[in-house]
Structures are given as structure tokens and as C-alpha cells.
Image 1 (cartoon, each protein chain N blue to C red):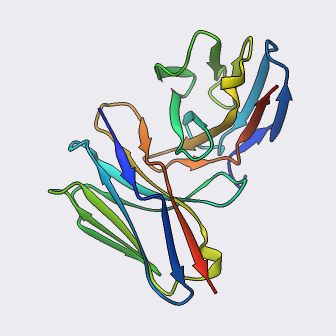
Image 2: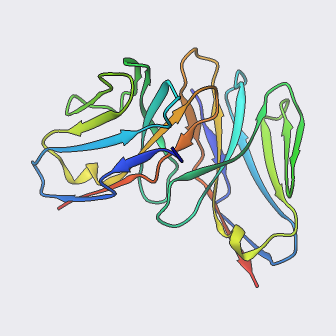
Length: 112
Length: 111
């Protein structure tokens, strides 16, 4: 079955880069996503990568995908206090329907 | 239409009562999803609609849970005979392609 794992917590200083890591088990994953959740709010889609890509850059965000190791990372350049939130990695399997499996989330704390 | 909306945002109910939540997706989105999120966890998939057809249900969706999307637009999620373990955030998402956009959620507290 599908499983997505993330480290629980990351602390960085404002202005530094943050790297949030994720591993997944479903080798047939088609899309991989990063979502951001601020306290008491729903999930905001940040970016996504198709499984036949290995990198995607979108302004301060860089997604790296190592399909062989089933490892996904999100790098946030020049991290700001407004980036403090929980970041979820998620995968869309190839099972025909639209089931997305989420990780447990990484809480990013940005220290001013 | 600026996004997915959910109503109510908060619901407190006594154990054994029935509750119903509503989700209004982004207007042109034909796919709609329900998820449940408990504290410290990621969202867990509950069910998926394409237009009015419910195409997949998680085994998490016990027979006390029912979801409908009668006209392929808004959806309702009903929980009958609520239990304390049902306390969670219930999230709705919609999509046109493979990018799911989430609403703010309904936080259910069962006392």
C-alpha cells in the first residue's frame, strides 16, 4: 500500500534555505505534491511534480525528485517568517481514481 | 468564485447526534473529495466524486458516514450517531485536473 513519511520538525533562521524531505513507497506514483497548512486553515497547494521529471523550480521553491530512491524534497530559498507552517508531501497513485496519500507533515519554524 | 467553501467552519455536537457538512467546490471543477484530518496527522482520504457519481470510498468511511453530490455541484457529508472518535477536521477539495484545491475545513468536536 501507499505510505508517505516525513520528519516532524525543522527549524531554520530567517534568510537561510529550508529543505524538507519526504519518502514514499508507491513506485507507481504519478504526481507528487507539496502543500502548506497554516494554523486553523485548509491546505494550500504550493507546487507539484510529475513523476517523469526530476526537478521543478517555482520562484523560491525547488522540488527535487529521486524516483529510484523514492525521495522528494522541497527547498525554500531565503526562508521568511511567513513560511512558518506545516508542509505536507503527498502522492497520487496510479490506481485509476484520484486518491492522494499525504504524509504526516513537517512543521517548519522560522526563527527571526 | 475564489475557492472551495465549507459550512459550517466549526461544529460541536453531543455523542449520538447526527451532523451534516456542506462543501461548495470551485464552480468548473467536476471532481470533489472529502478528507479527514486529526491532530498531528496529514489528511486521510474518505471519498471521491466525479460529477454526481461517487467513485471511491475509503474503508475509513464506516456505514455511519454518507456523502452525496446530487447535482454534481455541492456535496454533503453526513455522520450519523456521532462518536468521540469522529472529532476531527473534515476537509473538502475539488479539482478539474490533477491539482486538488482545498477548502478551509469543518472542525467537528463530539462531546
